[in-house]
Length: 190
Image 1 (cartoon, rainbow, N blue to C red):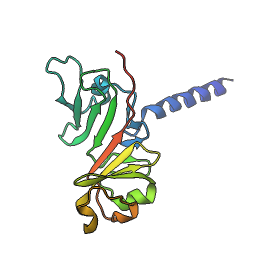
Image 2: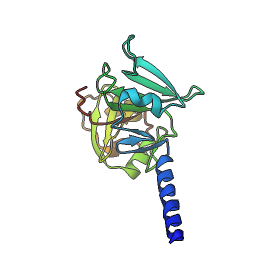
Image 3: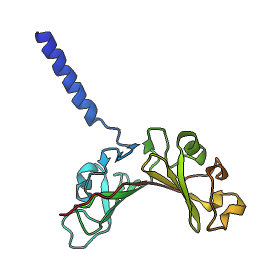
């Protein structure tokens, strides 16, 4: 009986420890490392306690973290830009994340240093929107959307605004210009 209780206790400890050792660079739907879409902007300081948080846009009289924030490693490398639903509300959830560091990766290995070939090999493209200087690629069943500079496209597509672009028209070697994560905004009444 004691052996069963001891084995159960060890299994429970291991189970709890596995949950705490989340890969801080893994991007999944609804999470990037320990940051989840339920986290409020005022909680960012505790999530990234070993890193530097720089307030980009917040009220000068703000007591808590609010507004857009950049996350830097202690060595100075820029990791993320976090944008909340409402920049004036410290209880707002984060709705947009720009990833700068290539250590952040999806479960399928997509990073900021990936090319469009990696995107096509691992994801289905849900939609492509064109802007003046880039195309925005939305991935199916994912929170991720990517921006690719039009300079990477064939010349006949670079200068057209209202053209439908098919994923097959984007060259395999096209680099990712911006790696973004978008989360649905939570309704906060506080």
